[in-house]
Length: 215
Image 1 (cartoon, rainbow, N blue to C red):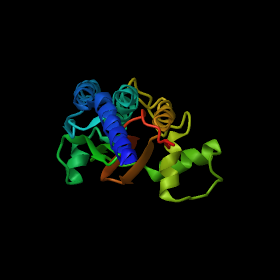
Image 2: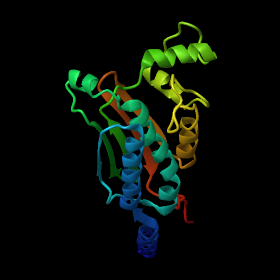
Image 3: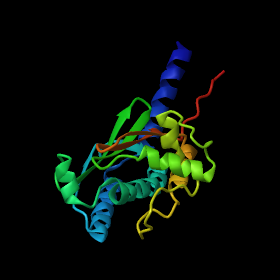
């Protein structure tokens, strides 16, 4: 009985400590909304930006460190994901304004943050050509799609033909991957040509807990 009471007490203390460390993502999402508006205005694009799940809570240390990766991925979504030609979007059955959605949700001890756009999607052929040129893949090699998408996280990798002040300078995505991995998280990409892309971050709820055995 004493051991059961000790176990329950330890569990309650752990839950209280986690609760003290958790903060909502809403303030961070608010900053990202301003960033998207400013980037869209700078590039002369119409963007319909929405957020959901801002009430989701995450360890304050994780929230502080995830800001820069989110900034880079959202800038990429505005700059590369959304086509500047409204006529091309209409021809594809899309509204003139590009859609970018930032969402968060919690599943057990993991928080999922997703950035979704209805833009052009990742150009698999352009990624492969660049990988062949740089020697990242043997010429003509066509690995699975997940492997191809993972190449964009290589240092200095870029398929941009025009360098802008926003992105496309071949820096950033490798830093994004390193930062997410340092937080014990993972990045998953889903993309359909002409339909859009989804970048999913899976992050631990907190970095403060280390499982241990009490003897």
